[in-house]
Length: 167
Image 1: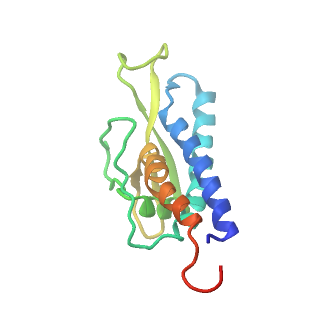
Image 2 (image 1 turned 180 degrees about the horizontal axis):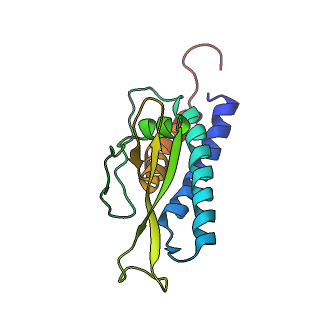
């Protein structure tokens, strides 16, 4: 059985993963500072809380289980130096221990934009810790890896009965 705190974190992480999915899928008006500032704050708050809750929940799984970040929402290539983080556990750790956490906005091509004046999207966040350099983390891929990889595994073990002993 899963401990109550782990179940709580699993539920919170699932909610936050859905919020992150939506924030990472949105188009933001290029020339509206207020919207960009609120989006930045929202993404940092949601991804930070998600990382803490998802990490606590993932500790219920064997450390050998890996969940790759392979499903981007936006096609992008880093324009500056930095590793692209490729697995959920590493991404969560970098976010939790971040000494620097930035939201990366990139402009959509005009034909893809639905907003007059141009649209920005968030294909990545960048995180640096005291031990790891600034790296790119795809927030959509992060939520996808959790919702389609880790979450089903965690829900399955939530109801498993412990081996041996009284039931």
